[in-house]
Image (cartoon, rainbow, N blue to C red):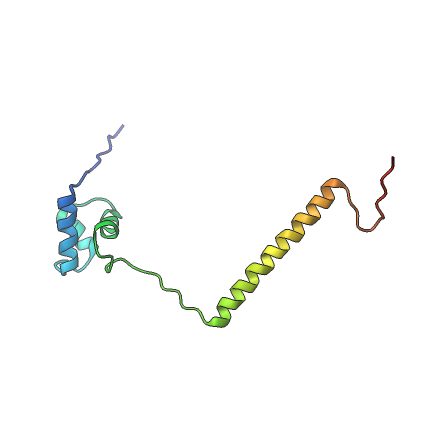
Amino acid sequence: MRQRTVMRYSIGFKQQVIDQLESGRFSSIDEAKEHFGILGDYTVQRWLQKYGRNHLCAKVVRVEKPDEKNRIRELKKQVRQLKEALGQTQAEKIIGIDRQRPFFWFA
């Protein structure tokens, strides 16, 4: 069985890599990984998130028009109402209530 090698990097080393990336010495994260011999796919990205200024990490920006936001709110409300109605129907089915027939208690 092949033994797995775990690499541990010092904070100073991590900071050196981040500083050189942020200063522009390397044009990409892959270039820095290759230069320093870093093997992990997301190692440097995690270091950037933890120790860097995060301006090199990709960000997702969602732009919505006001009517889209209102539509999403309406749809979520409708989903909640449907779940409540389904729950009510399931509960009635479990306890045996039939809305079509009148329900009588016999003593």
